[in-house]
Image (cartoon, one colour):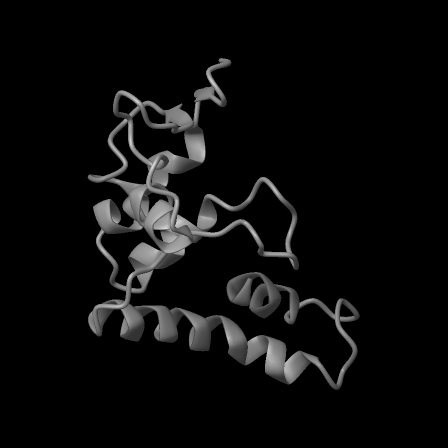
Length: 129
């Protein structure tokens, strides 16, 4: 959300003039906050409540997490097992017998190159491809 508003602050007329300076600063601040939280050992759960940007762009959050210094594997876990832990749903977030998890796949290895998350070519939700 921070990165989105920071980018939009560069566009004349997107935000009222009174909002633009704060919007321009917020992306870097949020990214720094995420980095400091990770460094302090805070458990990070990926959410879908962005609200300010278009839905479908949520995967960019993985790129921003990695830019902030969070390892790619940890960023990916934030959307799976860690999100389930943060929400207190023990039966979700991992591919394991008796548990519930939606599955995505992509060409490439997102741990080696997090940009791979931008090219998802397989989705299974609630058991339906």
